[in-house]
Image (tube, rainbow, N blue to C red; front, side, top):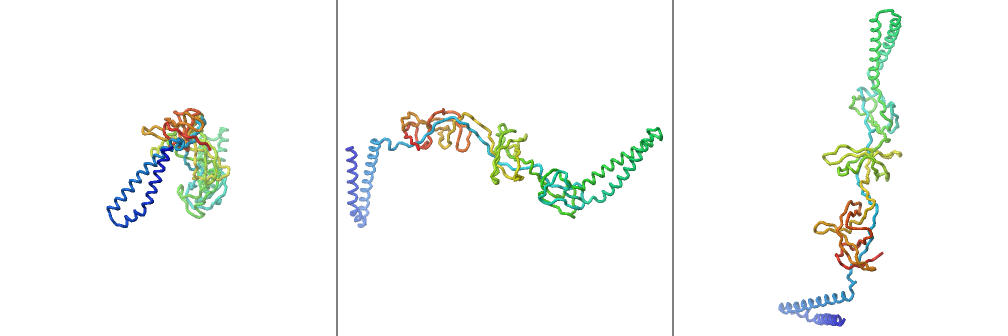
Amino acid sequence: MRKIITLLTITVLLTSCADQKQETTQEVIASQNPEAIQERRDKIVLQQQEINTQIKSLDKALAALNPEKNMPLITSFTASKAVFKHYVELQGSVETDQNILITPEMGGILNKVHVSKGQRVKKGQLLASIDDGGMSQSLAQMQVQMVLAKTTFERQERLWNQNIGSEIQYLQAKTAYDGQVKAVNAMQQQVAKASIKAPFSGTIDDIITEKGNVVAPGLTPILRIVSLENMYVKADVPETYITSIVEGKQVEVSFAVLGETFLATISQTGSFINPNNRTFKAEINVANKKKNIKPNLTARLKINDYTNNDAIVIPQSIISENAQGEQYIYVLKQINKDKAVASRVIIETGKKQGNNIEVLSGLKEADQIIEEGARSVKDGQSVKIITY
């Protein structure tokens, strides 16, 4: 303690001397004498060095008297086993197989559109009609001829059964009737192409071609029909997950714009790896009871691809890495109330989820791990434990 008092006294005297010579220094500067100015500067620099040396000595003495003053303050937590789940997060798009443009099967003038935009229709309902170019009249004539051929055949058949008439007459009547039936069926199929019907139940999303326009088979879109019943989300999955993301896997589906999140399952996975981006397709069926999920809507998918029921999990922020690429953290040893010693431990990590990471080796349950202050301590250093 006497040494400290002596050093403090010397420091005060030197400071006092510097203050007393302040006026003299100004006089030296005013003299504009380079030699005198340089000499005065050298003296002041020497005094400053002596003061800095004394301050360091004082700090060292104080540290010896109060060893806890510079002891690092840390917080800690206890390593414990818990369920760790890793999730793959992907982006997908809503699709439906029942979203099609209706085009005609035959060419002609569009006579009438029987539905309006936004209208709900049932499967088989008439949507539009095309001028059949007189095929309906031809069909009517063919049907009359078919009736006549049928009557002739039935009469000839009765006579043949009674052994009246020749076999050739019977066969000719039968052939004529069969041929007429086939001709009528073929014409009915052609006439039916003039009536455009709904291939499935859904909603008329858009009417593209109006009445009176000439339409071409397979080329002119007339209307779009969409069903919001059977919707699914399709996503590209990296090939590294081909064994963990499979049919039946549970998925958390989120639609940010709708503010909705629900659970679903993977209904189908692709058998083809895209060579351009090394991904395969996955489909997730989604229920659309509110009819607010639309085709091409963006969805976020969260899929649990890995679970460890007895994992030790730590924050990734406390992990450091040495020159050999090994990961390490600090645990507490020699714990005595709020004092302990930091000990470096090499660990092996597994999967990461958010800021949490799975520790595969290097830690055991009940280890006290340094959290706050983990990057400011050294191996074997004494630390002080604080609590909040």
